[in-house]
Image 1 (cartoon, rainbow, N blue to C red):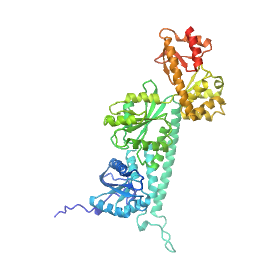
Image 2: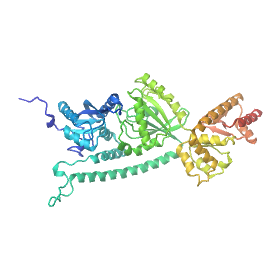
Image 3: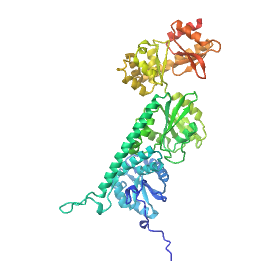
Image 4: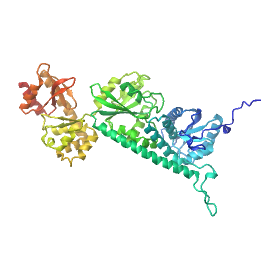
Length: 564
């Protein structure tokens, strides 16, 4: 007679994770040959920290998605209420005993905890539960190990895994325990635990050296990008927010797109042409998540350096998700950790095709937010226009300002593709214009100017302007309004004289006339000591570019224009 009873869970081979009986034989922490049955465990802090039951349930929902992405099935969840985690078992010995009974009833292979476990807590729980106990960090590392495809990604993930694994190494029974003490009991040599620890440490050092070499190579690539006239935009955001979908829509990049967490880990850069004709480099980066392991951030630092070097961050948010504000806070926390919190940010609320009302509401709540659908293209045109407006202007240097033009520092900035050198009729307004130009420049260029000021004999006025542009934000706000107002007056005056005049960059006016040639006007103004620029823009033809000046200077300029 056949026995139809379900097998005893203790008789069925269960997954022991990367740290159990068979630790080290597989790179993953969750078994791939079958779908493991998993219970997830969270904690509600009764001391008022942690956000309460709703926050815990949201976090467990996300942990369930992580487990599913890793290739396992969540069969139940357990929530424990405590004022603080138990130092020995995290949830307390009594709750751990209840959890063991539940695991046996549901034939569970592994228990995953929503918070980090110490090595001691993990060992105690595995002993009490009779099965492996993992934490959120282990699951995220497992997913990264599955999805890493490039050499750099594999090195980064393995390094993070080994750093996580090293303090959790344990011996395998009495035969492999530490040597005994006393005469006649010494001499077994190294224990297996010591051998494993030494091998892992040696492997960590090897991976760190490999990663340092990759970082040097990336540094060389960054230097080449800095010499490029193209500005850079980094797409950042929570995992599965639609970053890769947006990059594919904008550039036809062909990046892998799947509706799961951490589908792509490697950065992808493509060239994008903005509505005004300017081209920029757009980079899709690895997604972030709540409680992202610090060791993973450290291991992926060379990849995340592209975020720190960007001129603008396009922060993609799942506007149709359950907690957009929580996702924004989590991403900004990681940005602060890698030193990118000061880079200008544009919030893009994605997935308007799923819930247009929620996405539109989220964009309205956050000033400057844009609602889009990366799948259908809804709102992408408005996003690109906002992107072009948000990118910082290049540095504006007034070549007509004698003291600055006579220094070697002008040669330095002339060779930089992000610098616009112009000859202005406005000399007394040069300081304001220079301060305005530096204020919207890349911080790296400002730092470079200040760093070389002694060796390049940079004049005190230009250094004071650059320093003030960084330190005096109130001054910038006041003069930005003044420049805009003065520019508007100049545009209206030139239109009254029959010119087609409009804004060109921050403090310039571009003027053309359908009937009058432009070069004779330029030469006539130059003969009377008023300097503007005669230029020829591809696609626009030739015209006159006028730098905004003071009211007196504009009066003098217009008086001469009326006589021509």
